[in-house]
Amino acid sequence: MSQETSMVVPATPADIDAIMACERRPGYEATVGRWSREQHLAGMADPTHRYFVARRPGGAIAGFVMLQDVGIETGSLLVRRIAVAEQRSGHGRQLLGHALHVIFDELGARSAWLGVRAHNASGIALYSSFGMREESRREEPEPSGEAVTVITMAMNAETYRQSKRANP
Image 1 (cartoon, rainbow, N blue to C red):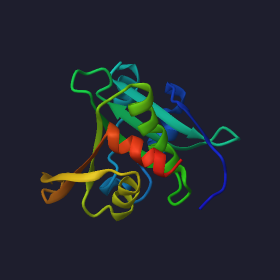
Image 2: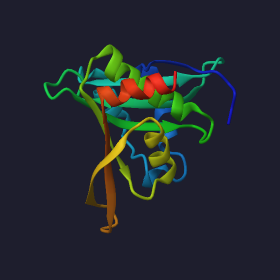
Image 3: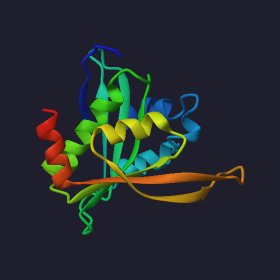
């Protein structure tokens, strides 16, 4: 694990190339998902989305996280996508921690959730380490026509606060 310190900051349209590069790392097509430049530009312009990047001291992007459903009446925010340039660097943990801080401490949401493919063991382990728990499973079609199991994981504000107290 890298000991390099990154700063998590709001993303800008200038970060889209680096965001897309993270999404397009080998193996991520089966776990993360990919958007086009136009989709990311639209997401950044949408008031219900929030993008954050982990910026290394030299300015390079180490990863990003995208939130959706900000300001929507449900009070439950979606962690839509999280991807890092280098796995096991600690940046995914840093980005998820920041996302949960924004969701619960800044936006006051009641809950956070995400979908993770059942074969993504490292993602499931990361989300579980923060206190997220499996709520349901569903089958989704792949472009190849095969089905993949997607797990919905979630946590509520109280679980977040308890986790924060246990892991300051």
